[in-house]
Amino acid sequence: MLAGLGLLMLLPALALLALAIKLGSRGPVFFIQERVGKHGRHFGIIKLRTMVLNAEQDTGPIWARAGDSRVTRLGRFLRATHLDEAPQLINVLRGEMSLVGPRPERPFFVDQFRIHVQGYERRLEVKPGITGLAQVSGTYDETMRDVERKLRYDLLYIKRMCLMTDVAILFLTVRCLTGRGAR
Image 1 (cartoon, rainbow, N blue to C red):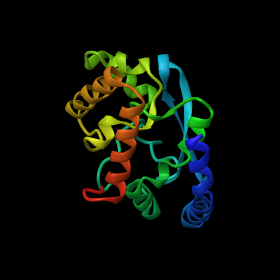
Image 2 (cartoon, rainbow, N blue to C red):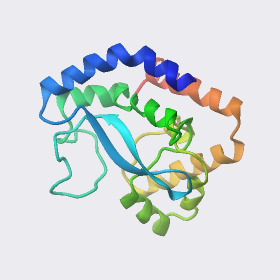
Image 3 (cartoon, rainbow, N blue to C red):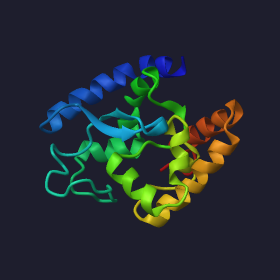
Image 4 (cartoon, rainbow, N blue to C red):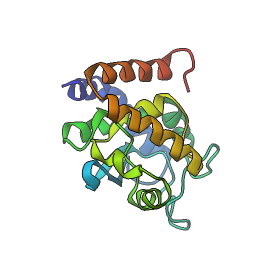
């Protein structure tokens, strides 16, 4: 219900952003990328496109970094405000994601993390989320150490998962995006 309401409220902004993306760079408005969800099921996560067309054509899957040259000018704004994530409300409505949970990762990286990060498999026991405890507690992954740190938050969330925990994480997400310490 919250996802549907959020999508309706964001529809005018999404329409304007879609037009800006189309005018600003070649390619589709939406970027659909394969991710790994609950019990290892694959699904297409929906985002507003923030990178140039075929951004990983020459490199294959790599992590985005600060100052990444593949990110468009508008894409930098969308990523900074996290507006590129708004279409994931559709993933929530389709039952592939939840508002709160561990962030879904790409299959290439999940395969690596299963080998190199002990206990990584446990985060696939729950539905992935648009936001999560790891997201309100840190930054983007750039190293395996970052992945291990975020896994600890994800496992803590899974252990303490309940409506009140989700409400607290949603509140912290809003605070991270709009209040003191916005990033």
